[in-house]
Length: 335
Image (cartoon, rainbow, N blue to C red):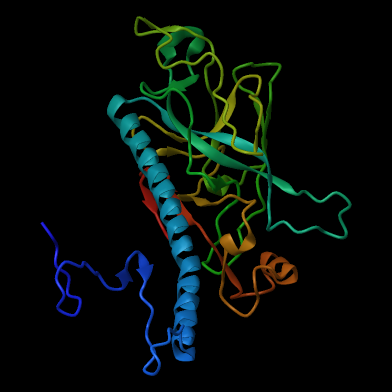
């Protein structure tokens, strides 16, 4: 069947504007029938449209990353809530254990001319796993933690995001409430189950250290149930995962058999906060929101803001997660 196009009333030809014979139709000038290109007005309109599209590209990209950040924060929030419910349901101490990643450059730590060896890298939390504490009737394994059934290792956070080992800002336009924390353990010669922990992690994060089993044992009559032979390794790009400690000590948020948060050490805070945020090695523009005239690329302004001498300059990008000690309630907030 022959298609009929609307081409001056002639049948048998097919024409779908603005194409003709596979090429763009040329506009005809009003005189002489000579083909012309774009007029100056049309060119200006095209350039304006291109400029608008380029201007939209950055916000749309940022919206994509913000969506990834919120998804990662919500997954961690759900995991913390699930650990609390698991603890209260099965009447067993339960924890969300974190994998510590080190040697991550921090773009907000600026060289100090008075410090000959400024600390340029930090540690962050890059993955999580739900674990529970073995009860007293497990003999030599009592008090150790082991993964909850269904968990065979740490599940990494979305690429480019982590939990910072520093207390979140006290106000939305403030700098972090503490410097990046350090997590380090060494074995206690008097009690191999209780490694000594350097208390360099801010207690306001609510993190405590736990021992994770790595020795295959039989639990509930099933060999190796919920146990792993060695701590799962996780690497991403140039980030270096800290090597496992001798007794496999990890940072964790712990919940008791009633679902309450077990505070670290002798801390008596009612509310603990962590910040799910972009990795410290991300550009400053992806870690800070500009509030005033100072720009994130201005090192002097960033340094003054971090020291608390420049207010209303920046706001950190991140989503705080709050855990309440007496109830174990977990909430997501905003800076």
